[in-house]
Length: 286
Image (cartoon, one colour):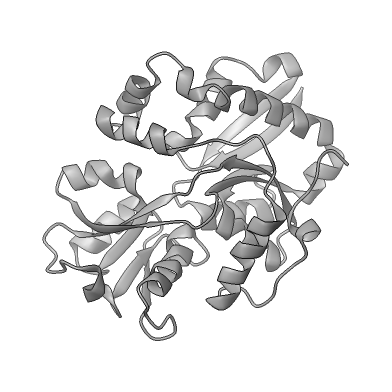
């Protein structure tokens, strides 16, 4: 049995991995998968990859590209979700802020530096025409629970997180959503430690075959909307909307996409240099 450690956020995007484990799809391939939930998101996962706590991460595209340019010994091996991630921009329900323009210069709650909530605050600022050097302030809150606490106690002013994950908090009137900010690229990729790619290539390919077989027919699973609604405590109409917007992928990330992400991150001074495609992406067919 080959042991494989995989990490991801405990959200509906990764339900296919839960199914693969629950239904025992890895065992016939002689693979023992240990799944790790990372409530802190991308920043927590990049740290886990660097420190060899996991072999594989299902991770935000911009976050892992940033970390690889900073020396993380990993490569992207496949796009997991092709469609953009729609980030909701939230304030506390009782906040006085009513318009996105009022958030200029205010404190953004982020899970950690280098996380998606951190990087997308820059993308949002750019979209709104703000000065990213002077109009952004950050408060580290670790995770979604920390963001609820920070916004409620006015230790931070707004928080960006995937809109369907936070929708129950909006429905409960904990948060109020002022707007959305979609990623201008595919949202989730599968990143793997270089050492694992080199030493366990066949095992990695088998893992990808299993998960791709599930995501290829994910929307056709009987009553999948009701299952996700119950498991993640979301309204079924929200799940139906999310499923309609979400497309999984079986392919690797394109060079043009990697170039676009790096150009955007460089423009925002989030990365200091760009890397060639083959230093960020591994082709498992080679």
